[in-house]
Structure formats: structure tokens, C-alpha cells
Length: 93
Image (cartoon, rainbow, N blue to C red; front, side):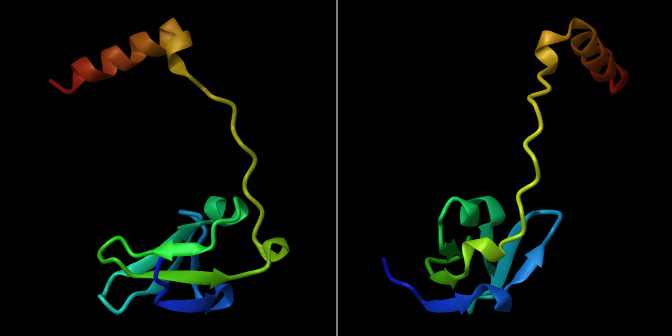
């Protein structure tokens, strides 16, 4: 695996809504890595438009915390929610 550059996490842009760090790529796109990946120990950010990769230098203890996991609100177990979804689909005709 070839690394284009090593980048300090402080030099990256963090998007709180997407919980993703970004860094400009020479191709014009941006390298990206999610907060969850960083918490899982991943330190390689990839560019979605080319083959370049960067290594992220960071201290795990300095990462923002992950939000608490929400319980799986599977509407398939709730017949009323499934019926409502079907009614909503028929409104769009």
C-alpha cells in the first residue's frame, strides 16, 4: 500500500453532521475517513476519485466521542408503521 502523505488530524476538516474528516486531494476531490473508522483504529483515508491514500496521525484519546448507538427501530415489527408507509406510497401516485 502506497501512502501519498502523512497528515495530522488537526490539519483536516471535520464535518460534525457526517462525522467524517476531509482533506484536499491533488486530484480535486477530498480524502475522507469517518469518525467511526478512526475509533476502530483505521488510520488510512482514501480519495473516492483516485487511488491516492493518506495516513492520518492522531491520538485516539483526542477524538470526538461517537454518539450513543440508537436501538434498531425496525418498523417491520410494527404493523401500524408498515400500513402508514404503504398509505404514504399510494399518496404519491
